[in-house]
Length: 111
Image (cartoon, rainbow, N blue to C red; front, top):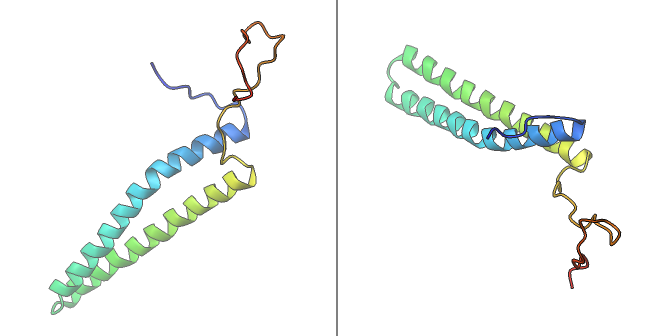
């Protein structure tokens, strides 16, 4: 079975986008930190060679840029989610009334 990929409203779109971003951002942030650590390691190892130090600086800069971009995207999506009140997207289960044929006498008050 494939998951339901229909997006009917903006809230559905933002909810799905938030879910995707929340899965991807930590992985990419981890990779960016590894790039920075790799750059620092190469900078220390290649301390005597100016070309290796320049390449290591490039790794560090791109790692910092990657972290900045991913945190910006994550923040923007969370601002949108909170602006449209999408943080609590659990379905309402107390929508059946006593006149509804699906009600079958169940207690919806929680007592």
